[in-house]
Image (cartoon, rainbow, N blue to C red; front, side):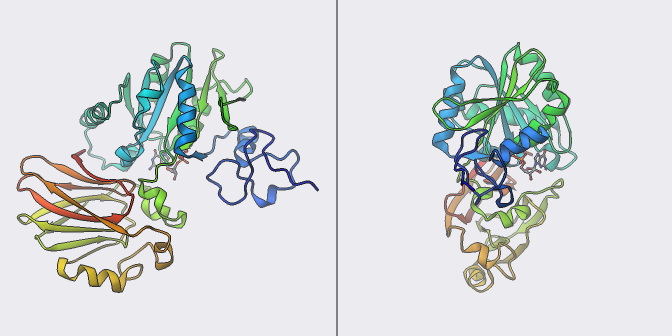
Length: 369
Ligand code: GDP
């Protein structure tokens, strides 16, 4: 029995180690004939898109090939990890093609959110990142919220063109595409594939009624997101599944909050004030005195402080410190990519130190909520 090394569907190199990377072939399917990767298998047999990921260089090559098409580019981002999942520089690669920004996972935000305010916030942030969008649509692909707006916007901006869907990993791109396959595509026609120029990876074309197609691209991996840094076994605790219940802490300067064993939040300087944590409610919170924090972490990380476990922590980079000064007057979020954010009320100003695994994007931004 011969050992095939590439997928006869998309030509990508086969591997049986990592389901989230291209070319994954489960051990049990090794004997299949012809040998195709799990992604091709699912698409062919279940009409179901599944997530694959590529690194930055491959992704930029794929994006570059979109620039020479005449298409609508749908950029899907995760509202919960907005700055972490926005593809900076997208504008440069898409050429003159219009970009529709679809903001997913709005189901995670507290129910009482003002959607118009949120849309304005998204538009402002996207503009500041240099991204010009024809429109911004908010939805939840998983909970089927606002999906009619996604379809309306596709109809409005497509003008008989193909649609390229781009996004980072874990933003819900597959979930969204599967919904489009059900609600928008023309499944009387065959799914087709074609190669991205200059790569071994195939694009899946989901047919539309007018002969055009929705084209799924692999997700881009950004190492600056906590979700890419923790082991997969911990991802379930990090990614909230239900609306987040914000946690409000009244802190005095000189107090520390541990978010599991993943992040340390020091309130270094400022008047007594409240901090609102928008993070997965599956994470353990522990308050202590700043002067005790080093010792507490050394003795209790991965245990009393909560996950990740000691074993999981071994594969996570050591902390670096980010010193952030919130000025009096404006409400700011301390944004920690892939984890969530902490809202700081701007009434009196604060000096904050955040310790997070090296490489994770930590920054101040204007408050979302
Ligand atoms: P992809 O990597 O971008 O293709 O993302 P997936 O579609 O595989 O989704 C990644 C994770 O996000 C999965 O755990 C999904 O269940 C979850 N997810 C996708 N869409 C939503 C959504 O609208 N809301 C919430 N809360 N989770 C979602």
